[in-house]
Image (cartoon, rainbow, N blue to C red; front, side):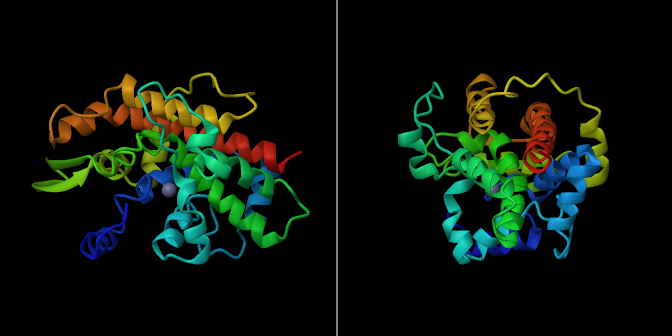
Length: 271
Ligand SMILES: [Zn+2]
């Protein structure tokens, strides 16, 4: 979605661009959860790669991929399509040639960046960027609306009006933005406390573990949640009831994303 200047200004004022991806906090939570699970060997490599970052942690670099996109840098433009995949129809019937041509979608991007990160012969800067991309894209792959329909651009064009404690007067948003921002924000917790809370959630045994293409499995899980959980509200007005109803699903996705990111980094960095 191309934000207008007004929505962009508003988004910057809130420091949480609603239409880009999980809110800043959502991405930071994924980074924080993953970092807490890394082995000392993997953590040492992460710390070495991030040593020159202003905020040298997985949480600290988790929104870099959105920031370069918003700034329209060369890499930001090149990576624009790496944040999502859109799949037509109601069956999540993914067709790589149609939905991810030339690997230009979140599934292709996770696989490509993991192979750059895992290749110690690649230039250091490429591997640093790959790590920062991976932290972000593994989060995106778990946000259901990042695997939505093409006709409404993953909910970006499904307009909604939200009225609730986050916006007592009511305000226009869209389904994608609700999932990026309002559901997580509505929990009202700071990132460290929220990560503590998410860590208490039981992790299901991972059905995507050991698959050839786990990134594809994670993303198709997201797609199926849209239908299974009826994420499209019946009308165009939503309140805190919608946020509260769906927060458990969002939190389970964040928890899984953190654990899977840790496992991916472990596999990629520690031979
Ligand atoms: Zn993103």
